[in-house]
Length: 267
Image 1 (cartoon, rainbow, N blue to C red):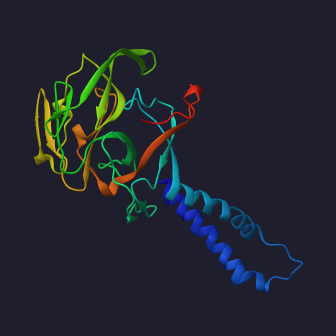
Image 2 (image 1 turned 30 degrees about the horizontal axis):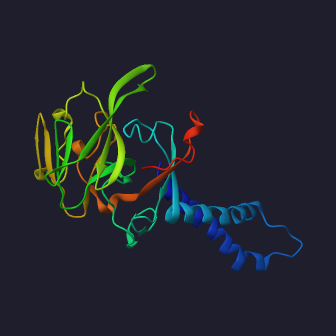
Image 3 (image 1 turned 90 degrees about the vertical axis):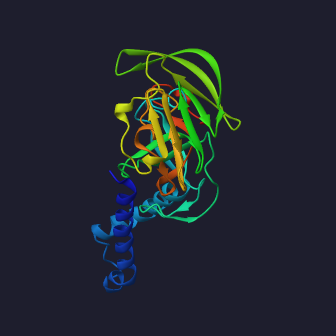
């Protein structure tokens, strides 16, 4: 469902009826005659829709986490807030950037339109900027030939698909001074070659059973999930074009299953 498009259509309809009544209909209506329902309701909803549309389009937009690809940073069922102007002001629906603000940085959590299906929003962590050389060998991330620091934090277990427990190992990874938690499943391979697709600029990458090396093309980003062995990300479907960026995730505002997560900052 393209919610921004639906909001825009509702805004145009209610705003159009409001303008029609203001400039034409009310002049021909007797003072003692009430507004017809098809005028009254749209006029009442128009300011509410306008405020919500502007807030979601230019300031902050809520999202719900549907999968475990960002565990342990984000859990299934987390409702998060995304800063829509962190990486530039964009026109709603078409997502065209009209004003630059800040550039994305390694380690930040990015919400973007899935390159294979732009109607879907994805959330991953930025590990590679334009021009970076990204290597992932034997579950070690290497950026521009420098291994990324990983400090073990012990075992991490979570429930997947009902009552299926997954046992992983936790680490604190540091990207350019930005520390965040990740988990690795020692029973999973570094890369599942069969899942790698023929994505744009695939020629920039070299894959084998021990991992891969990719050169990030201009105006693109390389992203990975914090749940490294249970994430569909740039390793499999390619780079995130700059035009697909939605915003920067910054806070968990609700979780029905764990109220203690309310207000958590996303690192």
